[in-house]
Every structure is written in C-alpha cells, then in structure tokens.
Image: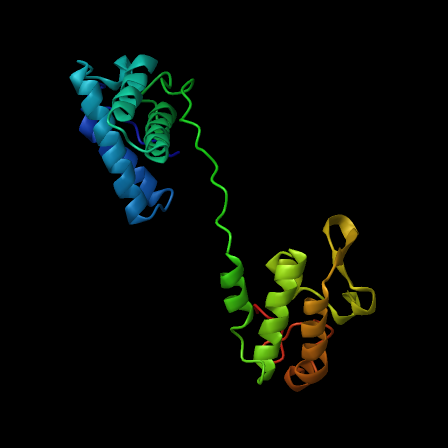
Length: 233
C-alpha cells in the first residue's frame, strides 16, 4: 500500500470520511480496481463507519475487534447472505490494512477476525435429455460439425479438461485400444479410456473432416479450427 498518511497538517487525525476517501483513492489509482469493486468497498466501509459512529467511536485509533464483531453481528441479524458478510469483512480488513501501512493506525483490529465460511455448492449436472441434445447439436454433414461432435463426445466420455483436449496430438490417440495418452505435469502421462461412441466420432472426424481442415503448418494437433490451427488459438 502507498503511504498516504491519514493525518492533518497539525498531526491530528482526519475525520472518518477522509480516511475512507483516501482508501478508495488508493484502491483506484494504486491497485487499479474496477468501478463496481470500488462501489462495493465504498458501501461496505461506509456501513462499517456508521456502526462505529453508533458505538461512539469518533477516531479510528479507538477501534477494537469488538467493534468489527458488532458489525458482523448486525449484518447476520439482518439476514444477509454469507457471501455478502464475507465481502464486508474483507472490505474492513483491507481498509484497516491500508490505515496501518500508511501510519494512521498502530494496530489492525480485524487481524483476528475471520470471514464466515462459505458453503461450497456442487456444480449443476446436465440431464440425460440435455446431454443428448448437446451431442446432437453439431451439423455432421460439415467438417467443423464433425469436429465439434467428436469434441463433445470425447469430453463427455473421458472427462478431459478443455486445455488437455485441445493439446491432444494424433499420436496420443490409441483408438484401436480404446485409449488416449494424455500428457500431464513434469512429463508424466496417463492413459484415459474412451468409449465406443467417442471412438466412432473421432474416427469419423479424423478420416473425413480433419484432412479438409489441415494446412501445411497444422502439425499433429488433433482438433483444428477453420484456418487449420489449433482450436482455441
């Protein structure tokens, strides 16, 4: 954080609002935060300063952990979502960290306060009907449609990451054995089984679509774009 000292010329502390203004200025110019993020910080810290004022705190040097805990209790009582609670605590933490670094505070009252733990939601899964519609979407009468069908079938059958899929080379396809050789970190490889439907889609693409997409500089990459380059590039 930059050393924007939050004190007046006579050495006295600035009002709370001036501290907030300096914080937001630092977040904008020194950290390049987007306008919507700055607005969220402004709302959160303004709410926090209002809580301090309600508790009779007029100087930031008088803030204590219980003042921050009181804000959290008020937000919880208002029924706010845990993600909103967590964002408010994060905003207060960054505000106080800024004040400590720039010399306006000697200690950070938020140091021992943790944001509420957020529940990790399981990702939504496609239904069987949705999967069938997705796989049946590409126009397999066209080379790019055959490519897209092979991509979808392979992703569905193998669970490959997209980055792994677009990096596949022709030599990594062991379709006669129903396997893919997928490179990993530190030069390691793993063998991934591929179902018959994905094998058929890949074979159709390789035999009747990829040759029409390939260019002299295409190299061994399996999935090509309309210009003969690697998909995603």
